[in-house]
Image (cartoon, rainbow, N blue to C red; front, side, top):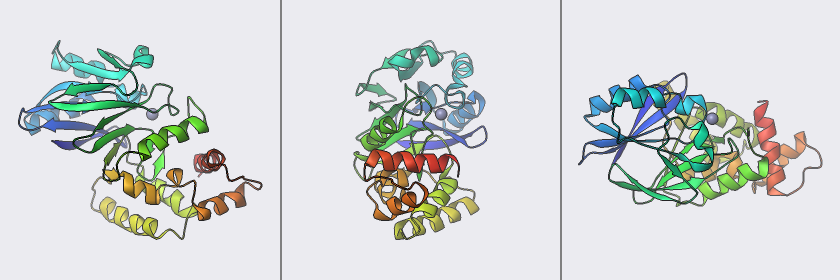
Length: 260
Ligand SMILES: [Zn+2]
């Protein structure tokens, strides 16, 4: 199996999850159907399934065009069952923890609400790959639009509990901005300093900064580091009286990042 990035809109990524032996693929979060189809045809694969992490237009805005252009009545479109009304063309509504098979691969849904109330991650255990949409970003996390801080923290904790080596593919190329914020609240974190340099090199070469890994996120992503003393101390300077409660620390970090 291999994963192809497809640039979408300004800073979004769609992905093609490819089973090379069968020459089939699943597309993840399509905003612009044309470029995803072009990437599939260049790779010599046909798209058999579409995975949707959440209902925002920059993740499902290309669903109808893709369905129309493929003209395949057998195309399987996956999304969260409770949000089916907002996922155009959905054929396979999933609950939390449901297994499914696409493009010869077995995946599993992980319900991770808070950015939106119906957000899913798609986890492929045997391949060690997870698609996290706008919940876990490289070096950051999504804004909390349809939930609260406790819910977002719980969603991130579920992803952080995946094996360290899991490759993480998220919905946007936000890594550099996220790491700028991370460094502002945890300047002494050596792994973070190294990552800032590595990411700058990738961006200068015009390359994506993804995938990341769960291990790297646990070392450098402030939203997974509510137990870091340095992070807590930085936040306490901005929010006097901040307690040791991880949800409160998470909420303070998220509020600061919203205005960063
Ligand atoms: Zn979104």
